[in-house]
View 1 (cartoon, rainbow, N blue to C red):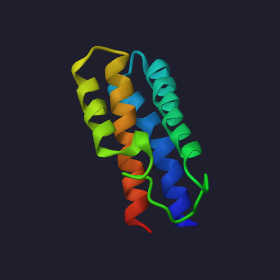
View 2: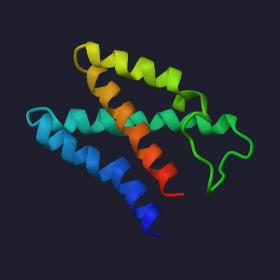
View 3: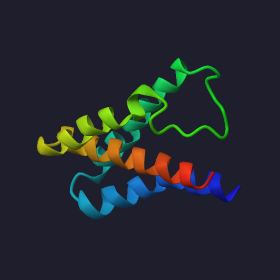
View 4: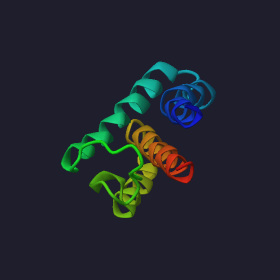
Length: 103
C-alpha cells in the first residue's frame, strides 16, 4: 500500500513540485512535459506478461535500460523543451528504481 502511494506520488506529485519550484514562469508547460514522459512506459507492452507486480522495470524494458538513460542524460545538454523531457525521463527512472528498492 505504502509502496504504491510512494510510486504514484513520485510519478505525479513530485514532478508538480519540481515544475513549480524550478520552472515558475512556465510551470504548467513543464508539468505537462513531465506527465508526457509517462509515455516511456509504453515499452511495458513489449513484455510478457505486460504487467507483473514484482518485476523491476530498470534494465528490463527497452526504454528503461542504462543505454536509454545515457540518451536521457544527453537530453540535458539541449534547451527547453528537450531538457525538460530529459529531466522528466531521468526522474521517471529514479522513481522506478526506488520502486525496485522497495520490492
